[in-house]
Amino acid sequence: MRIIRLQLSSFRNLGELLWEPDGQFNIISGDNAQGKTNLIESVYLLATLKSFRTQRNRELVAWGESQATAATIVERREVVRRYSIQIDKESGGRRVAEVDGKRIKRLTEYFGGFNVLLFTPDELVVSKGEPSKRRRYLDRAVFNQSPGYLETLRAYEEALLNRNALLRELQQRGSANASVRAMLEAFDEPVARLASRVIVRRLHYLADIAADFQEAHAAITDSGQSVELRYRCSLLRKEIVVGEETFETNEDAVMECARERLEESLEMDMARGFSGVGPHTDDLLSLMDGRGLRRYGSQGQHRTLLLALKLAEMVHLERKLDFVPILLLDDVSSELDQGRGRRFLERVEQAGGQVFVTTTDPALVKPDGRYARWEIENGSVRRLKSGGKS
Ligand code: ATP
Ligand code: MG
Image 1 (cartoon, protein in one colour):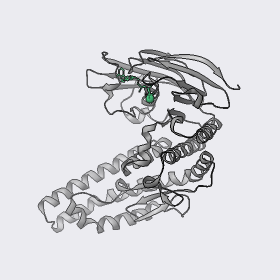
Image 2: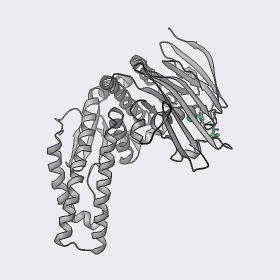
Image 3: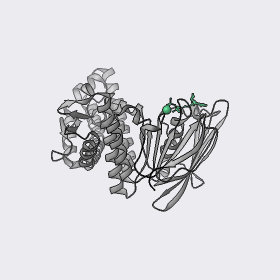
């Protein structure tokens, strides 16, 4: 899939922008603070309805303006669609989204047609930060390939909230009689069912990308360094080695375990006033040569891990949905050594999708094939002489 045209108005520092990028490889260079990340952000916003930098949409509106719009024409498997978003500063950043000129009412109407994969230096928190960052990452990846997963996830969160509300009440009361316990058991049922569905979906996804991930990682590092992903599952009480073990992907079996575990942890949950086990506490671990990356990994190793995950996701989406998602790479090359950076870009090129790479130093990004070069200065994009073989 590819962006045919991007049109922005008062989006951050980008002023009035009408841009028709190349269908394949776009290198956007510019000094610091010229608008490279803003440009990537606008595309990401159009695809996901969210910024990756802020929760407050009003910040996206250019200073001194009251409204920002971002619109794009996107082609996917020969279907052309128009997406647009308008953000109103006055109303606290309210957002109106349209697909093909029709205002959408439910988020699910918007998703599914416009897929991007993002990599920014900030993404390193996925590898280095709290487990919640990795859960978010994993959930987004599952959602990218099957938008319906969002509903499962939301339903689980809601079931969990209900259970937690009751637990908190019991905690305050300090005791639970038989009828309250019976009520709690009724709350456990949906939690167990939805929890097992979430876990199984995540495990399926990881199993699907396991081989591609290994391959991508080996290709980028060009070394025999072994890397392993593990899903730490609190309900199943184990770390599941991705790609190795026969996965517990039978939902009923997982649900059986989930039920038992919820029952076991009831006393404890009542004492603490919330549910202490479930997919909302799980983690995705990575080990390099047997050692936990989160603790021992170097900056470059974290980066490589994430790029390998993205490459695997890209290949997987292509295989599953038959198109290559748009790749947004903000400032990737700056912290990879030249070999890793080059090998990563080679893989990206092989996939043949549309790519947007930003950099302060164009010498760092030299694809083998055809590419278009752009320069961004003070919010304006202009074309530079393109290069490469066509
Ligand atoms: P770097 O190489 O440092 O990452 P960049 O080219 O990615 O730089 P951006 O993050 O895109 O820079 O920001 C470009 C400029 O836009 C910055 O000077 C920033 O302060 C400015 N900016 C951010 N938000 C707004 C806004 N709402 N209105 C106007 N300008 C903004
Ligand atoms: Mg930037």
